[in-house]
Image 1: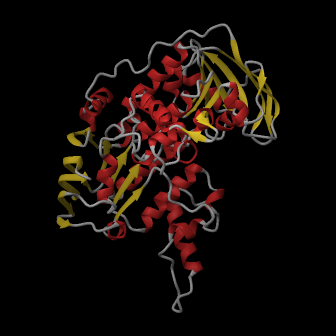
Image 2: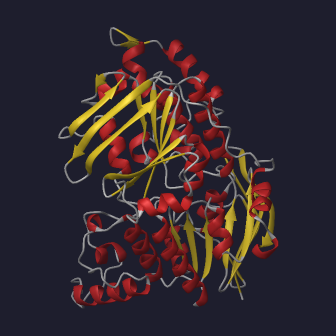
Length: 496
């Protein structure tokens, strides 16, 4: 049975057409992967289905009946639920309070019926494999993987027939991703129609029944998964050859730039020591909770209570200002909360760490800073209506380029990239890899922290593998394989 059909959907913002005649459908008990590069129109199309935007023209047909979805609440009443890439959970409330927020179970006198609400929450948690979590537990006490499943439990509380999942595995490790995909298959068997947005094509080939591809706001086509290879999907998405995804590795120079000795941060890192050479790409692998992100923050001077030493070109790093002055730049794994100020312009974000260098007596010359911003927009091929556009309106890949540009203009000697391609499409990934290669050719060192093993294998000269806050192993590019990395990461091998 066909649950949804969207016919000839168009959408314009301020006379700029972003969707042109899109056709899309999903059946009962079917997983449809919605694919396309960042900016292809996927999110806009789903926001129309979720009632956030109204289509300029076209039809939406639910179970054979044409509907006009007025707003998000109306969409939910039509049994449509969307799980966004950024969680919509309130950390200081309990699981039960989050799941039934605004829809609390009440008694006859209007008082909240906590007993029933917790009972229903427990049932929903059981459906997503979280029966061990108490309905009273605060969201802040839940792991990222658990929060993702709680979002799904919340969607199930609306008795959804259509579930939209936007990059649900972006923040999950391999084991948690496997659990999520198995849950999706279970929901499909119960008759739910699932719209699956992801950039990880191995997940598409595993669980999707069919793919629909958008490119530049246009409908490219639909095909059953058994008729497609990953190369076919990439070709449909980008319209160009990406056979050489990773550039040839640059050869590191002999000069050492970073020296880390016996670095210890209580409860986070334990006696970490390593060195980096000029122009080297040093990969850092590890499962979630291994200490990868904590390492990036420690190197940037964000932990005042650290022991041991971090020296950049012989200068000890004790604060972020000191790190920046020594030539270290940090691109965090959370670009929306830590890397950008979303309601500021591209121009303002690009210049954030640079203002103190270009101001004279507290006065900033707009002509000078505008030329700097325009240079990086051109150099990094940032797709934006202009430097005055809000950075929050850009696609994920272009937002990541703004973060890179913000730090590259500081003329860094070492740039720390923490999950630089998370949540961006394969075409944007290739551009990021090109930028990394160009940096190393200029003698800039890159610490590449990534959960994607092919990325580490394709880019890194050397790989450190972390486990429980320690360096569990070190592999040269020639020695490294996915199997060896995973053995170190899971504690199966010691570095003795």
